[in-house]
Image (cartoon, rainbow, N blue to C red; front, side, top):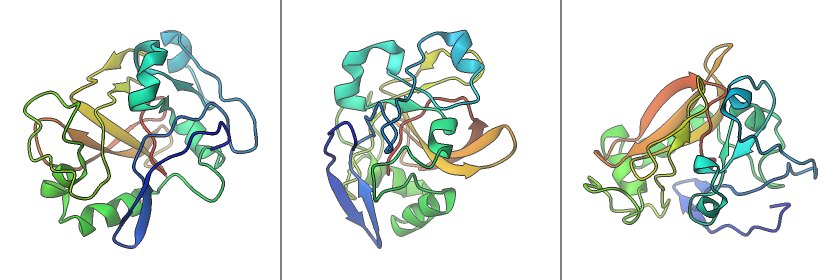
Length: 188
């Protein structure tokens, strides 16, 4: 990416995915993405931002950064030649891996998840991580070790966007609509 981070990639079906979470601090045009640490400021955003889980920079090496949908919506978050996937592209991945009830297990890393890491095989090579997330309504952080949620570029309503997630407790690839201020991982 523009910061010089190099990402492992994996071919899954007809798609090429990053096998790591995005870590950039700048859009691909060189513009700095604000690192917003204050909870109240985070919840009031209608522009792009990122944070580290629990505002702890040491989480970046393992989990990458959490981004809000507004950063995704710029169209400049992904490295040149890449893009943040649409909801439909996530559905294609889900279907290729055998649908929601088993796809998540094929996508989850076999380490870092809180036990039981149900169904985890990482047989797809996606290496999904439990990076947790940042709540859209109060800016607090939750569930590192238990959940990994990934932004899509697709709106589900004026205030929400689609996201896809993994949990330690099952092998599902979940799909939900959440406030655009949510802080989630990004895979391109």
